[in-house]
Image (cartoon, rainbow, N blue to C red; front, side):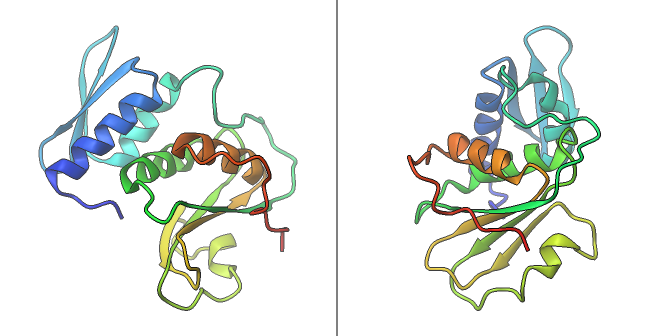
Length: 179
C-alpha cells in the first residue's frame, strides 16, 4: 500500500516511533523488517509491519489512544473518514497496522478506498471478508481517498485515525450509519 522503497520504510519507521511518543525507536532493517529498540530492554528484529504493530501496542502513548472494551457487547458500527487529497501513506499504513493488531475492542475491519474506480458492492466484503484480513485497499468511487471502518468501536477508531493523521474536524459529517 505504501511502497517498499528504503525511503518509504524509513518514513514508516519514523511514524511508528512517533506513535509510541519516542518510547521505542524503530528503524528499517533488512529487506522488509524493522529493528525495535525500547528505551529499556534489548533491541529486537521484527520481519514485517504487522509484527511491528503487535510489538508496539504496549508502548503507545498514554492515555491509550485505541478503544478498550473487554468482552465487547456493542453492535458493529460503520464510519467513514475522508482523507486529505494527498494523505501520508506511511502514517496511514502504520495506523492501519496498529488498529488491525489491536484486539482490545472487538473485531475491526479497515477498508482504504482510493479514487478512480467504481466503489465495491455494498460493503459485504468489508463486514465479512473471505480471507479474514483486517485491512483491505481497494478502488472506490470517491473523489478523495477515504477509510471505512466497521466494528463495535468504529467511531472511536475513526477519531483516533483523524488525530493520528492530523485531520481532526469540528463536525464529523463523515460518519455513515451501520448497515
